[in-house]
Amino acid sequence: MRAVMLEGKGDFIEWRNAARTLLLERRSPQEIDWRCRDDAAGDLFGPAPETVPLAGVAPQATLTVPQAFLSLAEAVICHSDPARFQLLYRVLFRLQEERALLEIRSDVDIAQLHAMEKSVRRDCHKMTAFVRFKEIEGTLPRRRFLAWFEPDHHIVARAAPFFQRRFTDMDWIIATPKGTAAWDGANLTTSTEPADNPMLTDDTDALWRTYFANIFNPARLKVKMMQTEMPKKYWKNLPEAQLIPGMIASAEASVVAMAERAARDAPLFHERLQAAARAVPDVPSPPAGTLEEARAAARTCTRCALHCKATQTVFGEGPADARMMIVGEQPGDQEDLAGRPFVGPAGKLFDTVAGEVGLNRTQAYVTNAVKHFKYEPRGKRRIHQKPNMGEVQHCKWWLKLELDLVKPKLVVAMGATALAALTDSRQKLSDLRGQVLSFGERQSLLVTVHPSYLLRIPDADRRMEEMSRFRTDLATAATF
Ligand code: URA
Image 1 (cartoon, rainbow, N blue to C red):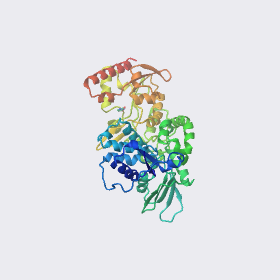
Image 2 (cartoon, helix red, strand yellow):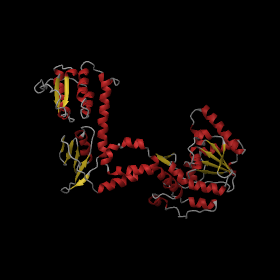
Image 3 (cartoon, protein in one colour):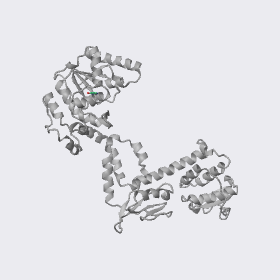
Image 4 (cartoon, protein in one colour):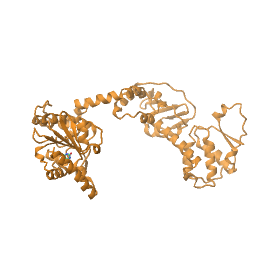
């Protein structure tokens, strides 16, 4: 058995020189006992290895090794598992005969190499995300910063260029138990000497907490995913992580409070957006006792950001005492320009099918779940965008007012957005479609698809089939 003693702190050249010498001597992997100085220190009573002299053995001799292996090896050498040296040498040795070895992902050695590379990559990524610099005294104009990080692997030198590029205009030191990196505006230096945690705190800790508290969305909380992104082992060095347990514990209550607030108050950000709405005279908000008052008040609605880009509010229309209310999703391009619901292609299709089953649209109150057109400009076109649940929640305020004032006997929800706005239900439209359900106080609800869905079905046979189901649904509404 030949022993090779390495520092083993992520230095690829050190391993490469040793491996090249051994390979030129045709040493098989089984003959080599790779050792790392740190590990050996703990092995005082073990048998002393016979150390192979590596210097002076044909340094100029060259070996051909695939570039892909070198890239993998440069990463894997940073791994903290002492078995990495042996694994790398075994793969290098096998590569001499098995030239396509690296392509065999199912090979145990190759799979292991990739797993180690991934772990090192992840560690580097976490370092770039979780280093928190604290300002220390320096000489102006350059400010000085110090950070503490605890990596799993020997990645300090590997990750340091990222910080040099990113924080090039300040002096910094990143100290870790596996070495240190420092940048002074001219030189990037790294060492493998373990450092001590400087235990610094400064004002930026509070800033991090404020930032984190503001980006945290309890409605989107997925605890498992969050802990994968920000594993617990990093929490102790992240000022903002102190907030996490409390945020998780109160997430459910915050979501309920948020939903209540959204249906009640206009959001704060609308104040900044109001400038866009100033062109419209400021009509005081309802209570509106009539549909006309409600329509006038909705003209200046700034409850969500959609009012900024839309031409105007498209409020519902039809008799104030209509027995039927038809609810769509949101105005489209033509409705936005005309200021009336369902006058574009989807409205025309609806009118045609309704006419076929004897449903007279002028006798119904026709409206939308969301009253402003949401779109994305593309060239000269405005491409429809589905409103999100926040926008639907804000606009529900108007829909509820319309329901309270018109008091229809039957409400027809066309499409999933209308269904969600009317019922808050997460049930699938396909499970409810075509049925007359009870709704509100002595009212009924009929759920069907949105006519623009029919316009988008590419296959003619399917379109006809769906059209016929839509006709049946509207016939149910007409005979109600
Ligand atoms: N789609 C809708 O949902 N409503 C309209 O007013 C027009 C198209």
